[in-house]
Image (cartoon, rainbow, N blue to C red; front, side, top):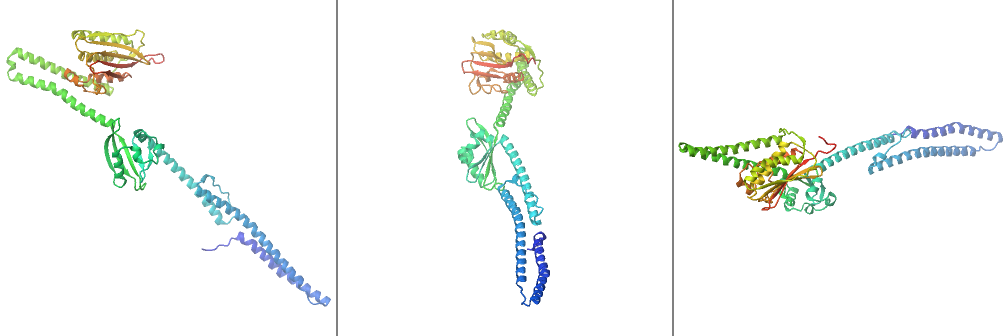
Length: 476
């Protein structure tokens, strides 16, 4: 390494040496000459003791001066070195914001460069740490807001991370799950097997149904060997809704095929019978034509209801909302269905409190809901039964109720009766398209209400739907 001599350090010593040499070269010869003259004058031998003492004194003064100057400069550099040492310690401890080195104008260039380098390093590390902290916070926020569950475990099977979706899925808080065995947290043998396979192998995907709520999950096991050696991640995608929609789609295709097949098969049989000679008998031909007309009416009704349902679901159906009395809606519907109920030997009654608040509704659409519900009640209530329509207020809603003492609905069907084309077992022999209740649900939801049913098999059914009331401050 090349040695450098700093002028600021060397010049005091050089100046001291020069002064000593000047004294030696100028003063000492004068003292020697004075000693010779004195010896000649007095006749005594030459006494160089004065010269010797003065030389010693000059040397001591020079040494002490050099030592003092050295101590002065050394103390100044020691303070700067202490400051640099403390800054290096703070840098190692991560206290970047506390490092603030004052300028070292009187220090050597190397110390000034070291001070500037330490200060610059502190600023750079602080900026990098801040950027990494922001990135980590952003990634953490994204991870915690993900709808997919994420669980990360180390090579020993200890959970290192659990996001909110995984917390809800496994009913455990992250603080309780961290550093616990993954077996204790996920509590499912297929998931444990997946983790063990992906820990030392490639990524793998499985689908499974889990829990009492019958959640349908797609689970992806991903080894994190390159980014995080020894760790693996399980990604849980909740496909319950997708699976349910796929089931509904399959049921829809199956049901509409079934519903179309029956009238089409009837029309085909009638046409073949007519072609085989029934046209020659006017009476028989007329009966077959009437049956064809009935089947065509059934197809027309199905197509019309499908179009109506499609318009409502897509928001293309127009509603004429009005402020109207709930009792008028009930009275209008009961009057229209009274004769039909009477023909099959049923009692159709109603009651409605006159003090119910106005509701914001389309009268024709709500009448359509009432007619569908009353028609279903008539269809599934035996001769001599009763059907009752009523209404009551529940907070900011008016709830309408259509009850009967008919055959009721099985518990396995009660949650699906408002799906398109869905028919309970007892309804399959009663005709109809299976679209009426689905249309009712969409109409009620378009009004801002909801519809539901309560039933005990063989003990009748109660259908409810709610409509928002018109109250002061909300006249729209």
